[in-house]
Image 1 (cartoon, helix red, strand yellow):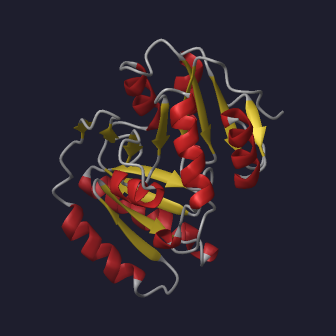
Image 2 (cartoon, helix red, strand yellow):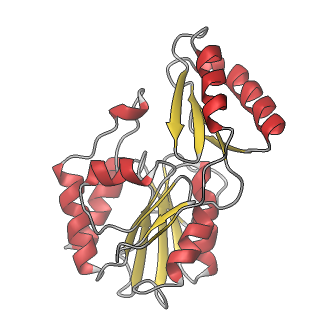
Length: 239
C-alpha cells in the first residue's frame, strides 16, 4: 500500500542510497541531481526544517551530494549527528580502522570487483559487481569484526565493519528530542535492512515507515516500488 500524504505535523527522515538516489556499482558514483536538491529544499521549507537525511554514508558525502549547508544529517548509520543549527555529535573512530583498511585492501585486490569503502567510523566491503563473492565477504568481515570488537552492519550487496553503538533508530530518536522535530509525527523512508531500526523508532514515536523496494517482513506500514515513486510522492507532499 502506498503512503498517504504527509501529516501536517510530520517530521521526515529519509535514507539516501536507494531512496533519494539510485544505487550505483561504485559507491562514489552515486549522485543527486537538481531534482533531488530542489525537492529537499522545498520540503525543508514546507516542514519548517523538520527533514533529516539518515544514511549509512558519512555526513560529508551526503552534504556534498545534496549541497544544502543547513540540512540535518545523520551519517555512519546514525553515529554522526549534524543538526540544522550547525551543532554536531560524532564519536571518535576506532583506533584499529587504519590497519583494518590495509588488511581489507590486501584481501580485496585478490578478488577483482570487491570494493573497499573507507568511512569515518567504519569500513565497508561491496560485492555488488561480483555477487558470487557474498559468502567470502561476509566470512572475512565476520572474522575481522570478532577479532577487533567491531559491529557488523549488513546491507544491500555490502557488509560493513563499524564501531559499536548507535543505528538509524537511535538517530531518529535523537532528532525527535530536539527542536524543530520534538512533538511531531515521525515518518521514516528507506530501502535497506539498516533502515529497520529507523522504521521502529518512527512507530514508537507515533508515526510510520515507508519501505522502498520489494515487500518483505518489515516494521514499515507502507511501500513504494523504487526511487522514482519516492520522488513523485515527495513532490506531491511538497506541493
